[in-house]
Length: 283
Image (cartoon, rainbow, N blue to C red):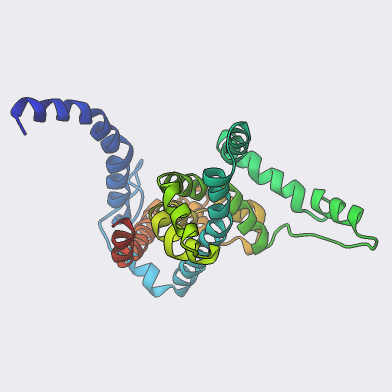
């Protein structure tokens, strides 16, 4: 690459690098700094460098239990999102055309246009004991049924799936759009049943989009705190809610920063363990 080309590329990429530095690396550096302190270095507080914050995670079994609970929540939400989202993406990419597709796309991205608190409180209205769901079920069934999913793990999963489902739909849609329709027609002309076409042709070719959507969902869900706290009630204590409490309620920023970095390390380790599968899906 010529020197002028390198200079031009650097100039074009510099805004992105500056943004990453300001929005990602500097906050992470500050978090790393806080995680090794005994107290926040504000005012006249006394503090010193220590590893006690990380040691507390390993000495207190509650944190590891909540981390495992959050990982299971992330896997559950990711699985439901993929199972629901991939068929929706397939219909959008290969079945529906014209303005109907545009209308469905509008419904898919609609959660991105609303505030997360609005979405959560909307589900609270639907899932509570005398809410919309309970009224609708009793209007259909001839006998009285009390439906109250509020303050339960089910409500947390529903709220998170609704919030992150568009990610897997959009990434799967892009991958399915890249599949040439003539390949599917050729498989049909050779007598391949629909199940074989789906398992041997469509899913392998769409795997990069599915995996990308799954990663985009799993990573933020593991550290989520707003949906579990508002929809879960006493069942909503997860690793993310504990981290939020350390920063907001307890004002123990060093411990909260240490717990955050442990979560980051665990997520990165999981992604590194599955990186061979990710690379194989992209080839």
